[in-house]
Image (tube, rainbow, N blue to C red; front, side, top):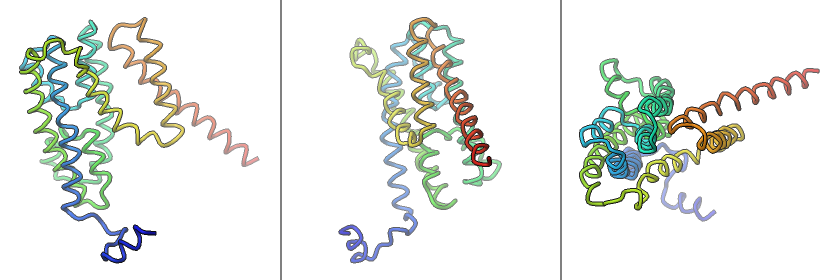
Length: 246
């Protein structure tokens, strides 16, 4: 009641679309918060044995944190480059689905789409999809994408250069920073039973496969969680529908 009366007194409409300044503020907040974790990737990548140019090239060209951490994590654990790259690739496939959704929402010119595709990641998709119309979606996507890309690559460079000064990177636990940020972004999406079941089964598959399979392969096995859960859910839904018709 207090919040409603405050809105009446100030003349604000709770259903009003966000202002440009509010969209920019939120997009900058996401970009800065996540972009700074590029430092952890730079340190982790250098600790895994990748050179400065290799580390920076991953951030410049791949630019999807979960896949980058998965790749260097698998290499650091002794996994083969093939399994490490495969795990990173399958994690990055989700961005293609974001792109399908954002293509219609943003409606960008064809000449711009290949460049914008580089910025299609979890954070920019979340900012754009949260907006009520195309104009603010474009604004949020652009600000978040630009901020993230610049900061992520800058802090990757700083982290890779400063890795030697930190000594034993494992002792700092920086390799957990990227996955922690990814999980923090993922957690609010686990609102339904199906989503929680997929996440739970994925964790279980990783735990079961970790002791017996090479590094990088458990991540691939966890990808099986989604089709398994969706298949079971679909069968139950069809069974419930056929029962209702009877």
